[in-house]
Image (cartoon, rainbow, N blue to C red; front, side, top):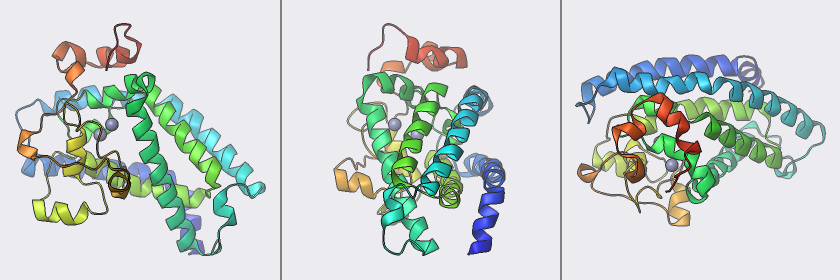
Length: 271
Ligand SMILES: [Zn+2]
Ligand SMILES: [Zn+2]
């Protein structure tokens, strides 16, 4: 276990990057073979979403440094409730508690992004995609990127989570975030089984339905248990599903990167 932790600490970010690239490529090809939506320009769509990679780099670097400093401080001062739990010497226990707590944190963050109008103005960029496929994963406004990482930083601070457990969680998150957005649907019975605990593509697609109450459902990141627990779990007949968000359904609102970038700063803003 010690060796594994050392490996994660040494190569975590690289593993994350290679895994993302590899799984993105795999998902892209699965979509080409078994996708649900075909009548759209896939490369053009991906090109628009991929531009957010570049705008999000400064925020990632900045918050990356803040993470390192925060974790250094919490471990030095034994700060955070994870440092005061029983079984704190078991790596397995440390990882599971970190994972579950940070996943709850993601749920709360996502719920807040939907409920606070000033924050929704950023998150709506992700929802404005009228086709949800693997490239939608990349469609995150740099403003939201900074807000999301700041929330994670807060959860890390409060919990006193250790670096290797956070990195391992992020590696798992690469799978789950791509899996949630893939243009593919699990067979219903399988979806019902996996969906008991995890967010499936089918469930996240409901979250991307263009109107309420479905947009405000299935907020979970990896686990679907929070939605079941807090009453935000929803299913709908997937053949009725329309991707996008009712306020930004027109091409002129969601069809190019420049327009998307400006959405949060639009004065005539309404949900
Ligand atoms: Zn959302
Ligand atoms: Zn999404």
